[in-house]
Length: 533
Ligand code: NOJ
Image (tube, rainbow, N blue to C red; front, side):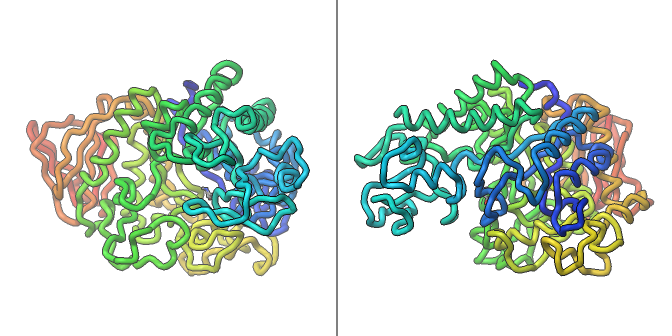
């Protein structure tokens, strides 16, 4: 386990929308390098960059055409090596995004695999040997010279790499133990080595749970792959970190990942914190590409001031994951948002966001902040771009200042990658830096505390002190620190002893008396957060 994860706080950068340094309207690698000091000063000492490789960009770059080449629109490989170096000078770490489950249909492996004559790549993808539709899995026919159909992993442009089937049921399905499937794994390890050898500090792994296909409830086949990858890391790159898009820490962390994300999947405890729009019958799927259609008029989120205040919906789901993370010496990563998820500002106000982030950044595990969430960037209702669909509204350019294109780019506004927030009160970094009470400055304060008190680090214990169904406040303990939260508009009292000295507080009304503490109880002001020693 890399030691640096104990004090790590990640910042997710969607490279096309972060900072354009050459005026072509799209973000670039040099733009990230230029903002390293900003990110570090915010309190984030690690970065995850979404795929920045050569790609036809039919799924925002998750359709990789060349795993070893930076997309020309972002710069060159040398720019990325320079970013690694500059990050390390600042004691920061950079994770790239590994997309092991599929490539672009334009990848050279796939081009070869599509040929009828057998070659080195014939078995690199999942091919069925006939041309009729197979129930359950999406397959594509009629696109290749080859006498067969290929399996998709996500969009039509993303053929599934072949890691085999757990229990093959058809003659054309290969066992995951087949040497050809092992070659796919070795090819992915080679990609990892390529970047690790050049200064990359690890990977966020896309759809990490879904490599070996077929019925495999425990993901035994897929886990075997990651165990082997972890062996390679432990031996040759012990400081490299892996975080999975899996949302099942019991499986992912025992398979060798260091961290696993909580995701905004429907029905999860995580989704009740900041995005519980469960009023609407259309909200069965609040994640993914349908988000735009979701009715958000009633929001029952825990952090909504008039939500329903039931933290148990989160804890019942989270605590077993937290326990298994501890057993497996790994971390659960709580995110503010990501490039697939509606920004929390969609329904939460700045004051509600302050409490939500204060919670996320004082929990165990390694937290992730999505670029722009620190200033409360909005989820915009805009047309799809590069396969984003309903996710596009969370991928708009970073809002730095009130200059042209909100400081993102010098290009003509009609030429920038996506439109910037055109509202007159669009939040910007520059404005919030000047306001001591801004969301940005609150994030900075909390992250500074996280780094200052080892009680708050990734690894230190979590103890639930006061958490009851439909009842507030919510109180937990990290090391010697008590943390109490009241997102509601009423005062809330808990009959439990806490410490006596308040070391940090957030209160909606600045003049409020945030907490009244006695030997046996604590009463919290409306919409407040306190850390007590
Ligand atoms: C999950 C990624 O986060 C998402 O953006 C992408 O579209 C799919 N995986 C497919 O790679």
